[in-house]
Image (cartoon, rainbow, N blue to C red; front, side, top):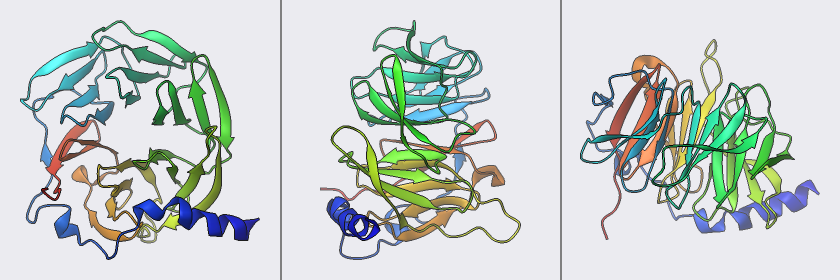
Length: 278
């Protein structure tokens, strides 16, 4: 069975393969560095990005949107949110820890509705409308969440999640060995063919091995927030380079338009990304 899985996974990832390594200079502008997002002057608990370049940020007592023109608007008055997942239709899911539940905020409304009770994920990855993967704190398993229900689809280990653009491959970061697993997404949402296709740079002795967050951009490039920095991989899983963590601490990341964001120690930082012009 393991040989079969080994044969299947390259086929699953075939659309991701490109001909050669991508240097970091083709992803991040040279001489650029992290810049603090000073438009948000309060502690940020969670962050998520939108393709239009706007970002969603959870503060202690509300969730806000910062658009490309640096205008801030309130999205929801929900407090204490620990994770945000935008949906394709413009609505968002919010992870609320006390009591443990996932909230749904429809587009154009600020009053959330309860989507699912009994869990408060620290990471979520959208599969389709009303259906997403979730990772829970202190639980290495991966869950599939739908309206008023959730079920285990993989035993892990997992501490962070991201889907490729085709939503046929799930990336799962671990917190014990600084690894990123790949899993095949089946038609029913179940997962199989776990392998370790992406190989992050290892942490030096004495440094915790953490993959705290994962994101994939519109070119299928992979970004991993780790204890040694934000590691960037080409679509084949080959390491392009490592960006030093802002504040020197690992955090959570988001991609909004052509900007990479990193949330570190309650502060939000950004740096530009490069995309080939058509």
